[in-house]
Length: 226
Image 1 (spheres, one colour):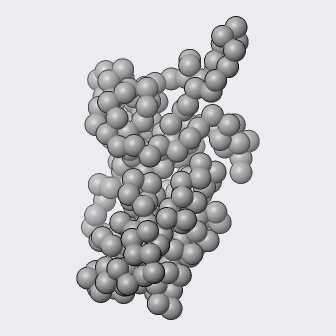
Image 2 (cartoon, rainbow, N blue to C red):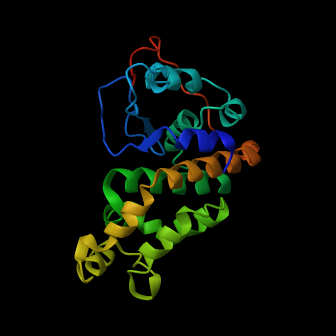
Image 3 (cartoon, rainbow, N blue to C red):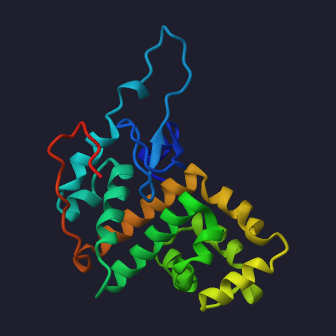
């Protein structure tokens, strides 16, 4: 883990909310973590309290050329913007775009709704491809957790058909709650930050294969444009 990732970990917790209207907090984008103000003596100013608002951070990266975005020091905002750009690419994906899209979708769904929802819905159709994508970007922290989630299915292979896969989940000893341990493990901030770093590193190496145009910067950086 890079020194800046270590520094980031000391001041973040995973965002498990959605649609927050507070401009100081990021929305429920994939791979987003909230800056949390730690308890401190009143005589000691909190460094977190002066941190830039999330809307300001997003505004700084949203219009960046892709190579600049991937090299940005603000990994949290960069990952959020990278995932947002990937979401606009649905057809004709290059192998690198496909890999990153699978990882970003996994992160987004599991962070907001857990592994049960990931497997029960459309993303689960690509469960095996998602496992390959985690391997491709060398997500050493996330991949074992995903492998444990896969292990709940017969032979570790979820059915390709969605209804059959939902029946597999219903037949598990704890049903939908069978994935609670893996979901909790995936919410570890260390896993989130490490996966973010690996996504950015992989994207930077394959930048010429990515057709991800900059977004449109909000006119008012103090308002969380969504």
